[in-house]
Figure 1 (spheres, one colour):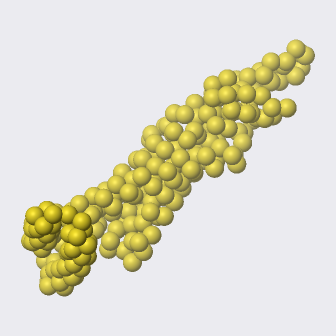
Figure 2 (spheres, helix red, strand yellow; figure 1 turned 135 degrees about the horizontal axis):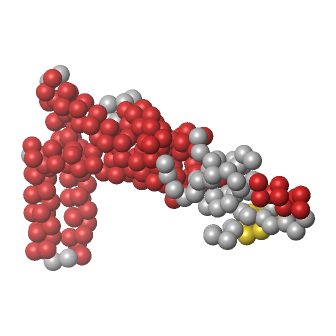
Figure 3 (cartoon, one colour; figure 1 turned 30 degrees about the horizontal axis):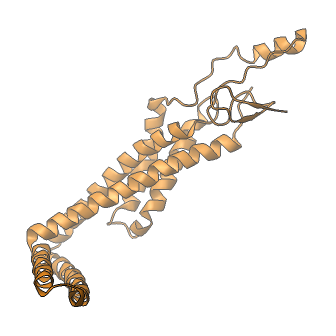
Length: 237
């Protein structure tokens, strides 16, 4: 027999003591003496709201998983191109390790997303710091400035050439003055990107953008981990 949770109105199996989605205890009343008494004894133990987070163990789990995920997701890692996978997996594992010591043995999607957010903040910050530190070491300690600047110039020149070709195609459909203005703007952008300020600005923006994407995937990984646990775990009674 199936019943509906009084909080989230999701389907709950009759033998389940908690809602698998929101964790609300499902009280069952019986008219028979013995079964009713046995059922009431089930709820004498303290239960936890599955939508809340006990942050002390949650932070331990988040930090434990964020450190390796942040290092692996940095540009200094050979596996940095898989950073989104590392961060989402780390958030899901942080939720799993946290739930192991909780009762009921699952949490809601919102609680999982919050643990994923914390994991992502720690991991993304670490990835940003490691990537920035590796870039500093390459440029100023290992004296790789020429190589780094040459790679950036090659990228900027290729982008500028593609933009000029697009402007040339559009110029047939616009006034000559407008086409000339677009070309002048593109020339200015190209010069700025090749300047030390432009190079540093775009490099910093790239690191921030990477950290933001990692954070989003960590939130999604935490929510997904909570969802999977809600489907597979059952409370101990």
